[in-house]
Image (cartoon, rainbow, N blue to C red):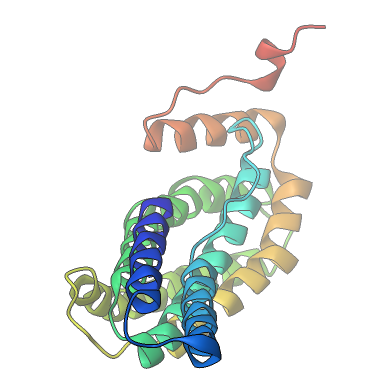
Length: 231
């Protein structure tokens, strides 16, 4: 992104020199020049607005906090998708749009899939075991969340096909409503109900095992914070 902006600024500077050295003179020349600068500045602000943001990193020995952080990143990606759709309607599939599409595609093809596996393979089974017989509605909740994962995957595949076109520079209609609604509703349910249950019922040993599996899934070494911060 920084390189693209620098290239755009260089083009703008060359254009300013050509403009001043052309046939226009006096106040009219400067009015046109300032109008050009204002127009380009607006475009650059729009370019910056569709970039993604990072959240603070958390350790894998805090798996519930890690899931919470992942939710935050997913919501940011949903915001980026909506900004991208609006950007495409005005500017078409320009370089910033292609870059934003690539980032969203890369996130949901990797971290987004890992997140679902974290829940399906680790969190849900551990929670069923830890709270067996103690939370009568737990099984229904987890079954509902699993069913939502299936719907979300189908919604992602539809969006993914459009993003694959955009990353090649091909203009395409990006409809985000179903995808972003599914994810936001799902995350709201998990934040308000699922993660508090996990905090209440998962034992330290279960959380440690879960964190180890999450790290291994991403090819990252599991290092407990306590081992890096001796008393």
